[in-house]
Image (tube, rainbow, N blue to C red; front, side, top):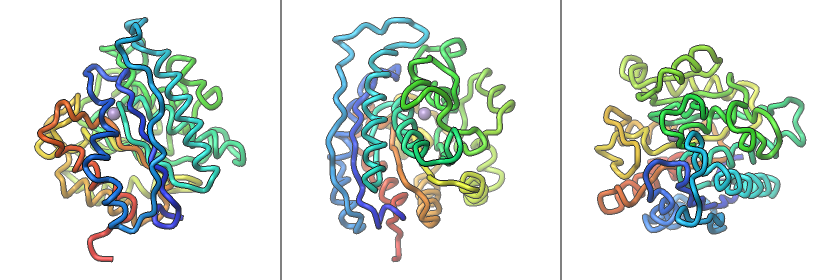
Length: 311
Ligand SMILES: [Mn+2]
């Protein structure tokens, strides 16, 4: 079942408490204004916009512990998202989550995992994850240089991090490291490097992509995550794309994927017809030029959900 066959449920997650810079809470609006609904319609992908998850504004809250800033707000918001994602899947629909900063992946993937755990044979369930990102997002409060939780979601999902976040959906790891492939890495903290090397995560840096070519890397990553897999999720941090093409993001870093490379990767992902959910994160219209980063995001989403150039 691909996005074309099942109806897409758009879920806005305007959360920016996990990021160091404000404004990514306007990502869902920017992506809608960039024409998401019309683009899905043109690609003949049936969709329904379910609106946004309710989130308090940061001005009404204190950040709290500086090593895990805004933990409570993020926990509450991600628990709500978790419920929405699992009920969307239970209804046989395709969750398309619009962030928001990358901490929202804790909610999205916990929801996917909780849904499959109810009927699956393994814990964590057989959820494959493709993580497109310049960063590994594998920090924990004791290693994070900033205390910003958007640098920690993958660690939380693997079972390491603040207990309240590891406990969303159910207590414990939501995904197995050998079912995770990270693509586009180019800015890692020393502890993150050690964590990747000591784990079963498949990690592809920009150097790997430069040397081997992106299609080779994506093909290998897909083969890894699709092996004995019940659900493939794609988490797409817009900062994986080079800032020449997608400048509107809080942690922009030169040396990323080109516009065409990002599309080719999504086209390869779509061709598998195995993707069951997708999230787009870190689009920040305050840092953008016009709304061009959100426009790029719309193109990426429609490619991933099955719009090909000739078919
Ligand atoms: Mn990220």
